[in-house]
Length: 430
Image (cartoon, rainbow, N blue to C red):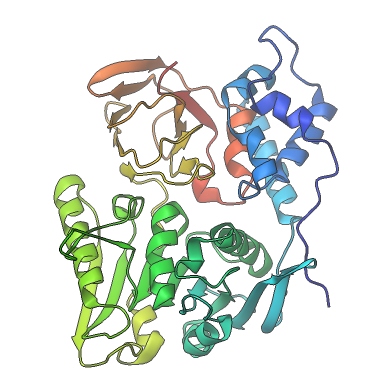
């Protein structure tokens, strides 16, 4: 059976690294010719951010500005099409319903396909429950398959790579899930604005956590009887949740299901998570959520099953160019959040970025050094025909025109996601 292994990048990574890392050619050196540019773009689109050895070329977008010429309108149209074609040639998933493996040489990469597999309206990544030594994709497929079919969605149900208490973020599982979502969009032709995460029990934890880390990828989240990792004080009282989740959820609708008296997942964990969402909404605005809390159902599925839960978010679409971004990074390989790109994200820092479209200005506040932070631009963010202004902590750090360039387009278009593709960028600190 064909398993759709990851595309092998046959060309050496060194040429791409020379363009996108600190070992770039000097500014006065001639950019590559047309044939060399095509080869380098093809190679870069084949790289995956989730694979450590393929991440390095994406770390420093500064050098690419010195290596690729700016784009005029005609060239921009051409390269958008070319990059889209390259992405479409990438690896896919198995289209048939049932159990499959992502990698030929690693039988841990199990996923199950269900729901509507022809012309689906949306994609659900359904995460199973479990814990140390337990949990399987079949339980999620059983819970969600019928709901996906009725909604006209395709469902992809991965199994964690290692069965631990935090299986969705251990041993590369998070990278596995994000790659599954990208391949599923390619395989089934799903609009990138209609990708949903949901899961029960430990799958609820995965929904909260991966949804927080990658909130710019999803239309909505629907965790069930699972919460982000809580933080407790010395008395054992739930006082907060783990970093990198709540701040990032500003622009993502959520429906959170919880039963009081749940013997497996104490409701206090979700109670405090929801409280933190409310506090974040007071501080930053946004945070559209519903807390569906009932009594007497123990650790069972919601009343009406997963169809009732998913119906609450089914009409949602992803916000691609929000006016405000709140970002608390925790992963070194998650460098883009909507229209921000950070070469080396500072773990657990909080960055707030707001657009003033009338003034063509981005205003940023942060509790850490924002060196290496870039603002990604297109007509949906700010007007490229006017000077773009960046302010950090009330101080102007950049003013000037943002020139469309191939480097920005390649950097952001290589995951095949139009909502996260930009044609220009300006440094927060020139």
